[in-house]
Length: 468
Ligand code: SAH
Ligand code: SF4
Ligand code: F3S
Image (cartoon, rainbow, N blue to C red):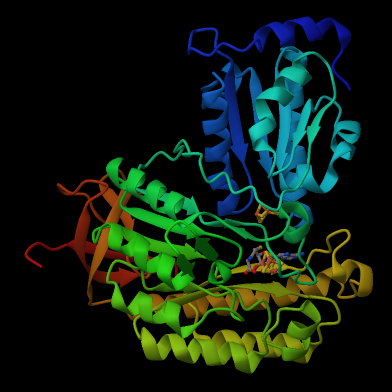
């Protein structure tokens, strides 16, 4: 353990547990990287720490405990975290009593190595061990090695009401499951998050009701593969799959917007689409990561579907929910990807006409199937060029998708002040398109009918109209 001897007593004193919140309660500051699941987990972590007498602060300078919730999905995600750790270490030099904890996926992937490599990291806690945080902080405070990276088959933090950390108090995440059983060849998530488990549906509904009471207007149900959600409610003899859960959440309040992420093309069934079509408050947008347009690459990726199967799912969406926007994730330059495979990805984008995509260069991750079995053989320059071509095409397609809305009146949930002007608000449509419009007398949190009169590739512009 790398905490210098002379600082141990200071740290131990600062972290003596006080159940009531007092001026002396230890303060925790938290930074979150990675996916929405991590954002949601950070809220669980703060809730667990609050129960143990900590206060949350958004000012790093006044923190006694700094936690960084990390992501391992690509090499550059980890580099960003290491960059932040450098800054925290500078702070610790000035104020040695601060404890620094690395939590989340990088903690799980690197385990003890983090304590060894990253001098001055005091605790390392994996995604399934957050209940242990207080004990580990106390342990680190006395200079002992503080690490728990055990993965669990059951942990879903179902009983914990997350402390909402977002600023707008309008949209929130509710995690419905953890882990992933899919083992896509390139992906580190099954190793950092463990196997898939679904959360008790009643606790999901409890979180949703709590959010409604707090005034939230938009919830996103989260899981790595929401379509395989499954909860057997023994007390009610009830078998709840994702389509049932979605319907139950939508029924809690017809004014609550309901979104979900992420759907998996191999598991997304028509039942889910029928539920989406039935309830006006379920947002008409599906994030359906394709990863590649080439069936050969999809097979190597172990995605469990072909291009034709994927296009069949798109056809089902178009048939059942014609107004639905579709977004995706694409990986450029996966092992052995030829120019022809790449062209097939571009043609898939054109064929589906996505509204938006997250686009990445393939990044080899240690111990994944791809790292063990396939050479990472696409030169960096080729990966970059292919990624750029994908980005350029997506910009065009995003623009075309936005143009379809010019002239329409759309219901927009106002979420906050536009970054560009304080006289403008921004919000989102059911289709998850961002709309900017004059503030006038509208307030964040309000549903506003906006007549769209202009657009860019990323944003719709318009004006609130009354009487609709
Ligand atoms: N569970 C979701 C996605 C989780 S990770 C799903 O299966 O769709 C989010 C995205 O990161 C993935 O969809 C993929 O596009 C990208 N990604 C994952 N591993 C990657 C890697 N090794 N290199 C580049 N991109 C990766
Ligand atoms: Fe990773 Fe595949 Fe699981 Fe998504 S479905 S988290 S890409 S293994
Ligand atoms: Fe990253 Fe872990 Fe999410 S690796 S993408 S934070 S599940």
